[in-house]
Length: 123
Image (cartoon, rainbow, N blue to C red; front, side, top):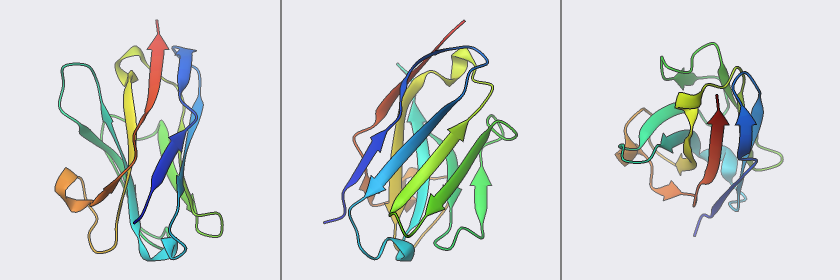
């Protein structure tokens, strides 16, 4: 069973930066595509960014392009989300997700999910 554990969330001010980490329990993590999603109160869970197995292909939502960067370290079984120039509208629970076979912006592309980490951006 693949387990994902997010960390790095917190309370910051608008304009600040945070780096989220997602530790994956799977030894063959390099065989998995990975992604970050987020869910704000009262809203649907939405796609943030995705990265292919080798890291050669990256997708990002328009709302975070130029501010957020997804990366991975397969030797450490970890996916990162560097978030810069944070805005109050970035406030949400951020979830890490993984899939052996698919990649994309849709939730059903991913079969493995973490429990989430809260990010709160004050104005």
